[in-house]
Length: 61
Picture 1: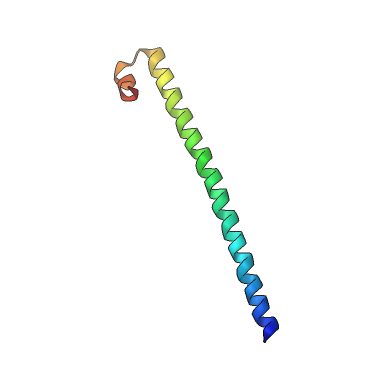
Picture 2 (picture 1 turned 180 degrees about the horizontal axis):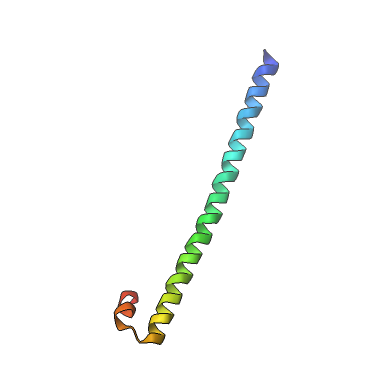
């Protein structure tokens, strides 16, 4: 009975560690996504500036 309780406790602890790792990985992925979004907006602004697209440029001001 005690051994079974210890096994369940260890399994719960392992699952919590796995959840924490997955949350950390999601934070990293979210950071990368935001970086890609920021880079896309910068490229869009540069392209609009190069084309002289004042309407698109107004969205960035």
